[in-house]
Length: 300
Image (cartoon, rainbow, N blue to C red; front, side, top):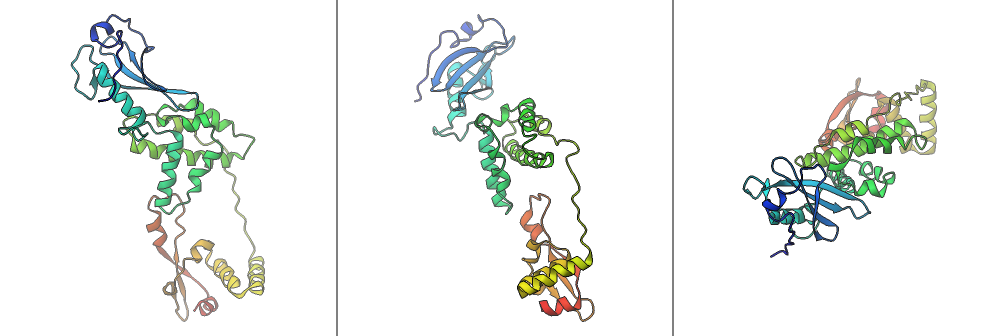
């Protein structure tokens, strides 16, 4: 049986009800290194609160249940002093002594987001990139305890280091990781406003970068590509005529060429841009693109 710690001021409801009502929790017993059980005295049932170290010199706190001050324990939402100890240990370290049940940190959220991106055949760098700019304190902080103020301070601290549009993209990656964590822990993570507000897009950051290349210049590029290498030229020719991305053309299959004598077409794979959660299925979709008879002959 797990070791239980006694504490005369909090152990019984009679002792707890002698304490004054206040917002600040009363400090209770130390359950393990860096883990303390606290008690907040309310006018109704008090609350059991866990205080735990994040491993970087900071602490996080979270209410875990009501105390059995006036109502009997139900083993879940209302707990006795000793039941609260067991719940606090499970929350801090997990059922088996690991960190499985501990509140997920920003670091953990980014790791989970990376696994999600890999599973969806998306770019895992979107989960690695924010880590390069986050402090160790923010990485170790539970997602449930993030505030809009600290996230906004972090975002604004990037000004001058990178362009506003880049900051917006970086914040978007972090927001996606935090949102995913919230989806998997809706009971404890109820502060979605923290990143919706703190990581909101900077205004007037998007600047159009559309560049229109004249047809004669495009022809020059294709001509030089053929001189360098025939297959490279064929790729450049295909991109110039279809307007597709290189990654799309690279996924073309033999069956995608519809060699009509007058109106040949390519069944071009979609780019799957736009952050779709069904990315693999989207990449498998095709759309018809009209090409020249000359290109069709070479592709054939």
